[in-house]
Length: 100
Image (tube, rainbow, N blue to C red; front, side, top):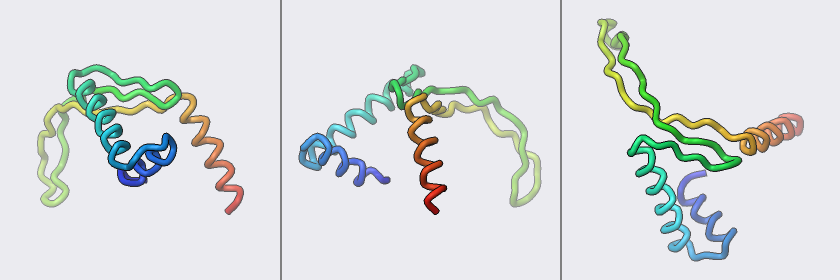
């Protein structure tokens, strides 16, 4: 599912225009982005938690030349699925694999 399909699904589900649903989705994603940018986690019950984690710098190799390089420390977004999402995915994957 891409953003346009998600907007369409929201519009249908809560009887909004696609423009209004698009604005709603943009507001939600902007709020999540701003919260994560401030280093705070975003927890959505039964869906999951987004958080910012620090990844330490380490050495690596340039795949093209094979020379050693130093990879800088950085911040990354981490997602941990909630119990409700895990349950839905687990039940859907077992039913779709048995129907193949």
